[in-house]
Length: 342
Ligand SMILES: O=P(O)(O)OC[C@H]1O[C@H](O[C@H]2O[C@H](CO)[C@@H](O)[C@H](O)[C@H]2O)[C@H](O)[C@@H](O)[C@@H]1O
View (cartoon, rainbow, N blue to C red):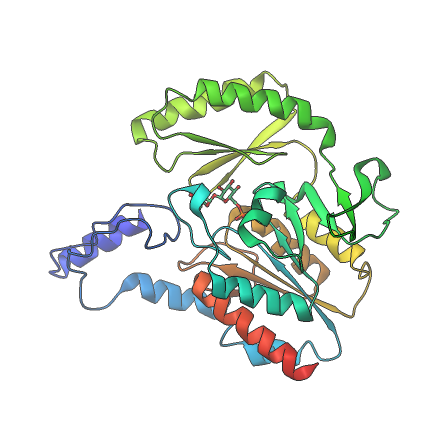
């Protein structure tokens, strides 16, 4: 709607042409074809003006860097990162959302200096496959599958927690609060794959404790059909599951009160900062599900929730970064700052 209004305004102002690339939600990487042969309007860019106004409320974490770091004096920095859209650009094929080598090095450097975890909607294994770093902790399935430090946190239900060793003999704690849902999720995954087979472009992704149904390549005409299929499949499980939405994706999740915000709290607890006033957590994320983690930081009155977005958005984040390339610049700067102050 806003885009349409701006388009009309440009027309009134005498600009004839408009960007004709694919209309999508959120940023897209250059891996997706965008038609650059069409002229962009020269002149006042209202979208930029709106973004600049939004930046007043959510200043760039790059321009506010020194100010932020001054507030960390004597406190422990902890870093939480989302994966898709934060460490890797949004691309059209979810299986090809690779992380660049410079990004991997920056995350490694940051993790060498500060406790660092990735909290993703993907399965924990898949995020690890993309990131391939042993220096960090991973929470997959929107925080429903956490691999954290080997600490028993008594306030969490022991039946969801177990200690284990990795191949190198390092001890970890695995916390899986939706464990009982696994048999139902497996069955639902099979049903969804079968029932969506005839919806061109639909892609069902197994995220272990959640299921993502992607519709980026589904036509507008077929979208309703896809929604109906999901609604019908879920209804067979009473209220055991619900759907949340991300970037061109519907995510089916167990109806337990557990999200990325709870995962952040769990990890802070296991890192030893349960009630600490001496910790400054940073959380960088781009999607709706990251808002739960932003809210937790707001609630604690601690740290910096940072949204990755190149367009103005309703958010609980205090600061912003435009896209994964700014995330990279931020992480490199954080690593340099950490190195010089250690
Ligand atoms: O919590 P995240 O790490 O941000 O994961 C959220 C979802 O990300 C992935 O989907 C999104 O990225 C894809 C690759 O760029 C893109 O094709 C898709 O349209 C986006 O929605 C992932 O595939 C999902 O399973 C995650 O839940």
